[in-house]
Length: 287
Image (cartoon, rainbow, N blue to C red):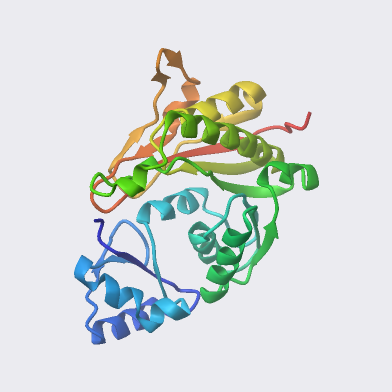
């Protein structure tokens, strides 16, 4: 089991004050130097952290540190108009709101009703005030706001392969190659919608917690070939070393050479596996 990772929520309280209270309550945290306001704890303290009043009121947030990387790569500014296309449960929305100092505007989209309400409660508890929520199908968003957003995060639904646990068969009970193909179809539609919603000059980050190239490199490859030189993949700088460039070949298929700039986060006992690609839109893609 991965150790609990705690993010100190600066939207609710000064992190130093939060840390002082946790220490006085016997919760000993070690800084995760890669990421701001982020700490690890021993597994035996997981229950104490989960049931602490600071977890209830949003002063602290239990998070997968890999989930923090896509918002940090996108790096939205306080003046930006941002689209979070598949936002629930809201971890990445929260990090973006913090980066934006609760300014600008995030439009957070979720099309599953129970996940939408979980997202709403999560953001309210954690002090996010710059976000409007929309219970809508993300594949249609571009029709309502074509080329409107400065920055877009698409943390796409996926087969969640990076979260499989060999000692927990339930974690991979629903996996199949058919599932991967189903996810690929959804990802391609969402990615098209995201590109069409992004203004020329804007930036988009696509991410998944899957390993299969069909869910990672392939959707990016298709969109790059579809829109040609209207899109370009940007270099990514992240504060960790456990990553590897994206694949350029898979099952005798060669992918777009720009994919060498995308990255795969490698599991290391603290971070889960992740795929991240950053795209800049150079010209209008509206058909």
